[in-house]
Image 1 (cartoon, rainbow, N blue to C red):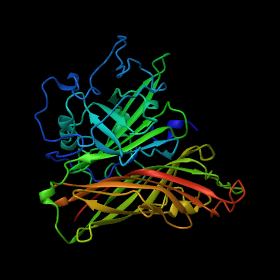
Image 2 (cartoon, rainbow, N blue to C red; image 1 turned 180 degrees about the vertical axis):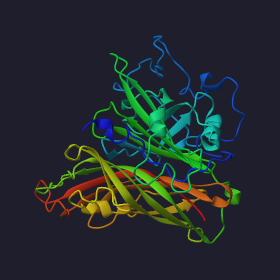
Image 3 (cartoon, rainbow, N blue to C red; image 1 turned 120 degrees about the horizontal axis):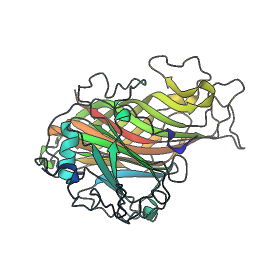
Length: 411
C-alpha cells in the first residue's frame, strides 16, 4: 500500500466553532491585524517565506533543495513559543534527548501571531508552513520546511465516517483544512501533507512526509492556540471535556482467517469520541478515547473500507477484529495550564494489550479553561490476538500502534 494512503484523504474534523481570541502560547503571543503584505510577507522565523533559489516557483527550504527525500532539516525552535509535538518515524515514537519534547511551529508566510489568529478566527490561510524540531539525533533526516498550498478538494471532501467535519455542532465555517505540496522532478521530489483542525480556542495539526522511507512515513502531531492565562486557571474542583479525536494507526502480525474480507494488517485512520476530566484539586487529568470508525485501503473490498461502530457501515464485512473495540486511557499531571504523562499509565490500550512508549501532552485553552486539546501516542502487543486467532510468528502476538490528537469542551 502506498505510504501516504492514511493521510492523503482528509480525516474528519470535530466541533469547529470559529471565534476571535488572544493567543498566549503555542504559535502566537497576541492577536495582530492581518499584515497588509499578506502571504508573501517574509517569515521572521525563517521557515515560512519563499526561498526560491532555482527560480522554479517552489519554496526550496532553508538548504536550497526542493526534495523532501534528502533530509536537511536544521530547524531549532524555542519551547516558549513553539507547539508541543509528537514525532513519529515509521510508526515508532521519536524520543527527544534530555527532558524535552519535540516541537513545531505553524506559519502562513506572515508572523506566527497572525497565523494563529487566522486559524482560530476562521479566516483560513491558503498557504501554511510547518517547521518541525524533533529535538533528537534524527532531526536532520526530516525535510527542510516549505510552504504548502491548501488542497481544496481535501478540505471540502465529504466525510462518511460520522465526524461531519466537526461533529453535529459544526458551524458553517468549519475549521478543518488540508494542505499539500507535490513535485516529481529530479532533485525536487516533494510529497507532503498538512491537516489542521481549529476549534473555539485551540487547534491541532498533523504533518506527513509521504516521500520518506518507512510505513507510514514521518509524521508529526501538534497542538496550540489561546492558552488559558495562569491567573485564570481554576483553583479547585473538576471539569469534564467532551469532544472528538482523530488518529493514525498501524496493525501488524495478525493472521487473516480463511474467508475473511478484511486484512487485519493495515494502516488505519481512526476517529471517535474523547472524554477528559481534569481534577484541579489533585492536579491530575484522566480521559478515554473511544474509537467509532476504522478506515483502511483494502483491495478485497474495492478500496477504502470503513468499519463503524455507530452507524452500521460495512458491518457485513468479516471478521470483527478485537482491536476495533480497543480504547485509549489517558492519565497526566497538570502543571500550570498544561498537562503531561510520559510514564507507564499515561496512554494505555484496553483489553489484552501490553502497552509501551506511552506519551500524552495537553493544555487548557480559553477563559476559565473552557477547552482542552492534546496529542498522544501508544503502542501495544497482544500476546494472543483475538480475531486473528494466532500471530504470524511464534510466540503468538499482534501489534497495534496509534497516535493522534484529541479535543473537548465543557458543557
